Image (tube, rainbow over all chains, first blue to last red):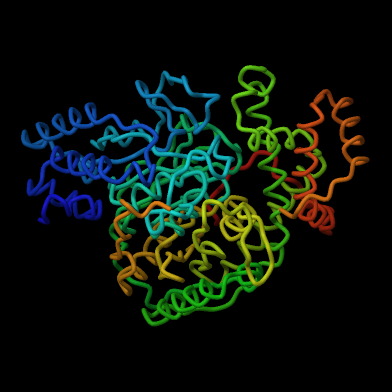
Length: 473
Length: 68
């Protein structure tokens, strides 16, 4: 086992194996993570709250259980983070907002219940943008370059994993907010099929688009976490009563003979040339690993942005409306987020319904594309991490709002609910680039298998960001 | 989201719609709302312009089922 200072950089799977073999204890892992948080998080701001005392107590309890022969499985004694919109009794769940600054939930999120039952140790809550809607509050930074944004609402979870502050952090994804920070921060992000992972106890953003899932350093870590959190939950009305797959046994089977589809439309229209070059190489690497890569067509893909905009804006406002009506609470939203929520009041029902018609058309087209392939591959984002002071970026010589640009390649899989995974696939201008892999409904096993095969064919996942201390701009 | 080009007349029209809809907002809030709506309209227009089949029904309760 590695030296103590190296422990936070191990994968979850490696740490789990060491805990099981008693080469390292949960207390040692937890203290190593807490020490690293103490050293670097004043720069990265990945955590909005840390409860070191409880974390160490829980780690001591896990250690006693394991010593007594009651090893629960790979998450037993593993320090993790939860995004600030996951309900946890005893710890405030603020949804990244002053509106909910004093909100104490009375019931744990189902995912947190399952992670606790598996023996995971909660270090704290990770930083998120306000109500998963704002872009720059509070100021979480990208460990690869602390002048840059680590991604949107689950940015704290991505930054925490990338900076070696925990072994896994849960995020939520309405238009890409697990995969976007994964892509920008050089880690793995998994959004399983809509309904596969319970959303109960995760503060709602857009009912028909919200997903809960993990950010981790390795594909096998995501598979381990999904094995714990997947499954039907009566508390979530959208939860699917579909048998949970075996995400581990087929993970190392490789991609020889598999057919990977690359959509012709949308994903290559406006993309930074450096990002495109990296992702095209990743597709060649998949071919080199034995996959057959072929073009597929999904014609309505390019018109889907309007559909997610009206769906999300109307839904967010519908949930927050009761708070917006209360003058004291209304005043606590930041002006930018309040304006977005007010704008949602002016989304017409006719546009909303047309968006839901487009979702059906898009799903039918994607299903047809899957007739000839086993998985799809796209870039995760059209750009790398942007400077925190920027609201617009230049892509292909055209200015574009960062909020508009960053989710163009991820939101289609929220509209269709399909499983999607982002894996690190290289660097452009020294910043991470992500490869997005998409599968059929409830076929997370294939997505993880392709992601693992790519990971093992390359070494991008082994890169570490520079020490962030002293690099804040 | 494109740069806002909202005119005063647009804001007055939006104020009237907001009042009728029961969402009265201050002039400052309306200006921000108008700016955001202006920014998304290009994509909303693309959505409206889609010629979808007459028999294509909206998904009113989104659920994902396994494909046969």
